[in-house]
Picture 1: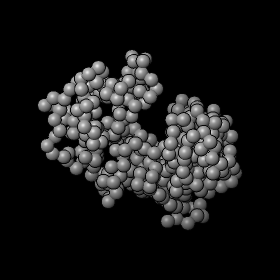
Picture 2: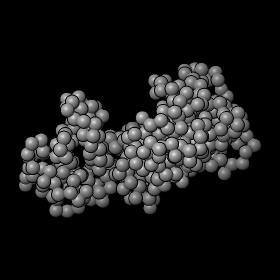
Picture 3: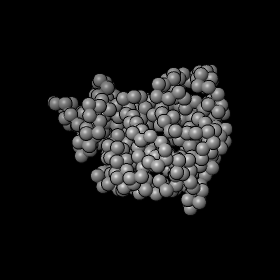
Length: 394
């Protein structure tokens, strides 16, 4: 496919997305209907689509319409590319530019330029302070690709060298002693021997920093209560000799975890249903709760535009319920870690404060907030302990 034909394909996919089709489904349907498209073509179309979704408002302004054509046209203008040669109407290229496609006379308003949903801007500004604008700008860009060096299989330097031998260049990242930022050939990772033999796992650097932050003790029984795919379970199991248990309200989310654990050379015990209560108490309980995902919107840009006030209210209630339920699973001298990938104080500090008001026998030992300004996704973590546990409270 020519570059112009790829733009036509992206326009087709984006028209479906604007009409309500999820992006992944629209891309899959397009690929099935265009078997002639090679892997490079599919990846190029995918990149154009997701770039447009990250910057949907500003690209629509620059392109003159909230359509596939408007979004692709706006993306070219945002990148400083003259679209006239690509919108030629020849072959499979997009139709020629018209008067309706003219560049807008004025720049988009501030929030539109930041691609921030209007209704959420006040809460994000209050939560991020001076970091609001630079964080929102970063969320308009593609996320870096990070790997976690699996210390069970070797050092970070050894993992870096193994990847380099396969043409994948990485560099250490300051957020975690196990983090590697991928600089070249990220799409070769999952077929590399370094990955297939468990030397590395795909995991955001900030997520690794959260795992580093938890107060593990050798031999401790630790429950990952909202395990999902099990990334934090794997990171904790590799960090120290602890007994890791994984649980999720939807066990299907953990279906790949046994295979991943075997590849990583660690043991993770999966608990379902009421078994988790019967297995309590635990020395540590990790709650990576359902949240807005605002800290990772550059990885899931559709979520930014689909998020609503009603959804936030539902999530806050769910987070409270999970905290209240999980605190009963912690041993008297254990800890409870509350984790989100959110940038919103309502889901972070305020949620912790509300929990402490409901449970005056608990205190916050320490907390940390990370934003994309530090390189990874946005995360929040608070380590909580019972006040009668003998540990100092901050």
